[in-house]
Length: 397
Image (cartoon, rainbow, N blue to C red; front, side, top):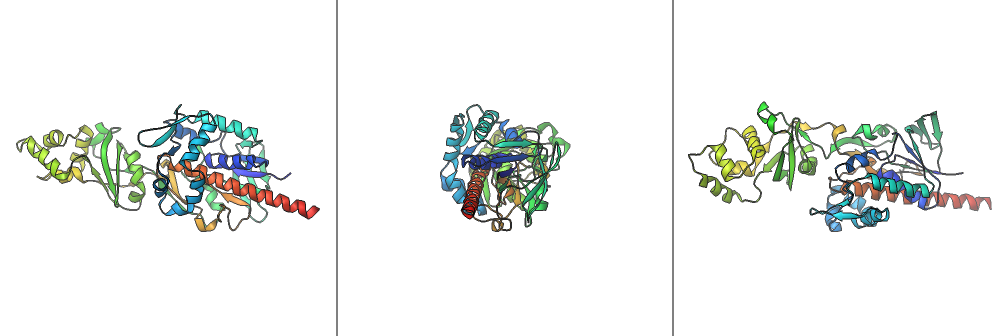
């Protein structure tokens, strides 16, 4: 009996399996780890941000050069559809003040359990500890290491959803890139950056820099970030990480609610007899972490402190290692795939999720695109399987 194979049981793979199962096909999901969706569950520990509630065109801009490629997939399964999908799994969602959407329980595990129940109802079989080790492209035979030894499967169609190359311990190690020709090199995305701090900064590690404007390569983001022993990280850094990775400098506006002229006036009002440190603390209202950062990177301080506060350069040493990144850039390029996300050089083999060469910031964009591409590949694979089945039936009549 013919069956569909999905390799990888993260959000993209499970969504592809859902569509294949919904279409009535037998589906086998092969997952290398002992349990499914480990990165998804890890993301849910701090509150599962499933999407971003904002106008579609604004949402789409966050995918930059991949926006038009992903447009039809996100139009079919974008923020509104993600919310409806979660609700259909019994997980009521709410939208926070920033537009980020979360399940009310603020966890991933209840949604995942409900999702796996739905997949089981469709007859989807999940095989854990099945690690993909390569394939024969000519015969479309896929090889695996399993608890019972080496196994080979020859499915009617296959959806690859093996993730990118970050957080290898959760399953995305990028090993598959050796078996898919034309894959573009991986780069870290949504990652922290290293800074060589002096001992002066140690008391402030773990402290947030709140209400700041981060500037990099023409991009400006009003957010916050965190000082760490290894450098600087957090949501604001992730939002500008692509520009920083590509070589732009990082500048911080520590008083974004004040113009430079207004800030200069407030600093002057403190009095010239006060030390620069006191003028920054009292006039610019810098907290201890912000004040420490200024003293770390801007000394000797100039007489005019306003430009320093409004455009503080942070000397970065480079990005943190790729395995620590939230996501990755690189992967299978658009021109290697048809409109259904099928590999042009391997008919019947589709790809989805972070295997594809696109990137987006955190905030619901990553997960939504993984779900949307998984759904798109699953629908296309189901259609190909149905067409092949009908062709065989006709040939035997």
